[in-house]
Structures are given as structure tokens and as C-alpha cells.
Length: 282
Length: 240
Image 1 (cartoon, chains in turn orange, green):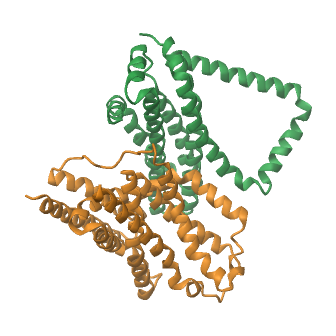
Image 2 (cartoon, helix red, strand yellow):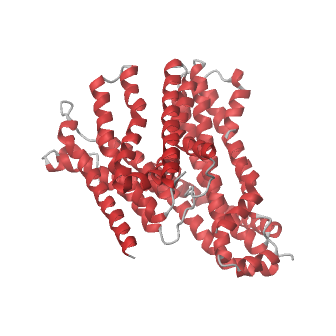
């Protein structure tokens, strides 16, 4: 079997396994919806399904466990770890703070005092290693395995776009849970899903850059963890602000919330392409 | 570097994996005493006391991975390898930190599962119990990291046995010194304690926790530099 065929086969096994495990956990959650224990166990299975799919695929295809990208590679790469920490914070700050500030709603950001922002930053920095661990399940699957198999088949841009779509589809059960449980409308659930489909390919570009620069999955894990945690921190700060009850924050932020992520993703993609071109020229 | 990681894994894999067992301890305790847990307070007490027990066990297990390499021959061998003793010590520090992370993650899963099981049994307020247990585990993890930052230089400077005795002597001396200061300044103790309480309740208090956490992480990195400086002096004193 040629390398491309073998990669394609491994990729199919991986994607099918990850999606089946995620769907299985969703079905089990529905069956045992009254049991919090089962909900917790199924949620955990779902979050770790890409990592499990990585291991299962390697066992099934007998390709071995080399190139797991588990080395830290800290030496000479600290700046990439720092970027992994800062990038999501900058992106989310630009997405959620700039629109109200630029549209004359600066008073809505009263929760963003120097001390509160500094506190959140220090807390994120102190707990970064621990909060990032929750991203291992996904990154060990999507970036440390799927990307490696996709890149020879679809190229860098194709990997980011197709990988982002698969990643978004994998999130679908989580996105429609709110609708099924009755605390969100179908439109809300679908708009959340659409937003995810729009941002994940670009977030994938950021994570791909980190992995390519360090040859390690850990900066991507850190970036993913900080992505989740910084979103929570910024939401918390917005909730502490004086936003009028009748104000529709989503209208003010609107489509602009995606712009910083798309811009950062495109810049990361250009850097990857540039590095590739330089490598080929050598 | 791969060789050093392989060596540590072969030598210490059971200690590393035991972190999962220690992290699962609160879950086991909650299952064992499930009949006695009737409300969120019972659950909190059970989770926190078992977390402290697990914390003590992990401390002992983490120190076991540090010992065993205090041999002169090994010290000379690793110093002459391409990675050098600095690379060897870096792997040790990274491994112990990874053990701590593994312990913390496991204990968080165990706490969450215990609380979910309690909620299924009709106990209310399990979310608060889970948050409290998570915070406790986090604080204990940082205390553990601080202890390792102090322990490891002693072990590599004086060897495992002698190092622990010298560390004990230092701690006891420090306690005696502090007690002496307290006795001599007994009239001023109220002022000191009032100032501490004011600082804790003041506006700056919110910064205390993240700053202390970051300081602990910084201390762990500084500890690696200190151990690197002391290692070769220690090797001279090791047994053959």
C-alpha cells in the first residue's frame, strides 16, 4: 500500500472512531438523562474521544506509537509557549471588548478595571498548566494525529479547513444539547454551531502553527486550555459590567467577534506557508 | 533526552501511575462510606479529608522517584553524557511536576464523579461541595510543588538519606527560631496578626492567591537552578 493510501485509511479509521465515540456518548447521555453520574462519564468519554481514537487507530493499523509529539521541547521554544498563552487572550479581548468600545458603548465595560483584568491574567497564568490539561483529549487526537495524516493528502490549507469542519461536526452533539434539553431554541443551537464552524478552521491554523514550530502537542494544549478559560474570564468580566438590561450585547458584538480569530488564523497560515516555501527552497 | 525519559519511565513507572490511584482515593472513600454520607456537608468533609490523605501519600511517592540516583558512578556518568546533569535534573523536575498534574487531574475527576453519584442519591448542594473540593485540591497541589522545590536540592546536595535528615534539622531549627521570636515579641503578636488579617481582608487580598501560586511556580524553577549548582558538589559525597 502506498503512503498516501495508508494515510487515507488511517485517517478514515481515526475520524470514524472519534465521531462514533462522540455520538455514542451523546446517545448514552440521552438514554440515562436523569443520571448525573452517567452524564459525567459520557461527557468525559466525549471529551477524550479524539485521544482514544488516536490510540485505537494506532493499535488497529499497527503503525506503532512513534511521533506522538509528547515531548515538551521547551528549549528554544519558550516564545511559542508564551504565544500559545497570549494569543487566545488577545483574540477574545479584541472580539468582545473592541466592538462595544468602538461603537460608543464603552460604559458597558465597567467590569474591565485594571485590578480585575490583572487578577484574571495572573490567575490564568498561575493555573495555565492545570486548566490546559482538559484540552489534551482533543489536541492529542486532532492536531497530534489527524493533522499528520491529512497534510500529505490535502495540503496545509486543506487540512485546516477540512480538519476544522470535522472538528466542528464533532462538537455538534454538544451544540444541540441545549436545544434537546429545552433551554435553547433550535435557532440558537444552530447559530452556535454555525459560529463554531466559522471559527474552528482558523483556530486550527493557530494550533497548527504552534505544533509545527515546536514539534510538540503541548503548546496547542496550552492554547486550547487558555482559549476556553479566557472566554470564561472575559464573559465573567462582562457579566460584572453595567450592561443595561434591555441592551442586546450580541447585536453590538455581532459578526465582528469572528474577525480577530479569522485574522489571527490567516496570519498563522501565512507563516506556516512561508516556512514551507523556505524549506522547499533550501 | 529520549533515553533519560525512558530510564525514568522504566525506573519509576509504578510511582508515576500510583498518582492515579492516589487521585482516585476520594472516590474510593466516598464509595466506602456512601451509607454515612447524607448531605453536602458530609460529602465535603469526606472529599477534603481524603484529599489531605492522598496529598500526604503523593508527597511520599514523589520523593521516592528522587532517591535512587544518588550514586557517585551515576553522577559522573550522567555529567559526561551529551545532555549532562542539567538535562538529567530537568527531566526529574519535569517528571515530578507531571506527576503532580496527573494527581490533580485525577482528583478533580474523582471529586466530580463522587459529587455526581451523590447528586443521583438525592443529596443537594453537591456543586458547592465539588467547587470546594476542587479549590482544596488545587491549593494542596501548589503546597506540594513548594515542598518539592525545597526537598529536591537537599536530596541532590547531600544524598537521599543524609539530605532528609539535614532538611529535618533545618526545619526544626526554623521552627525553634520562629517560636523564640514569638516568645520574645509576644506583646507585638496581636499587632502582627491584626496586620495580616487586614491584608487578607483588604483590597489587595484578591491578588494574594494568584501571586502566591505564581511565586510557587517560580520557586520550583529556581529550585532547578539551585540543584544544578549543587549537584556536582553532592556527587562527591555520594556512595560508590
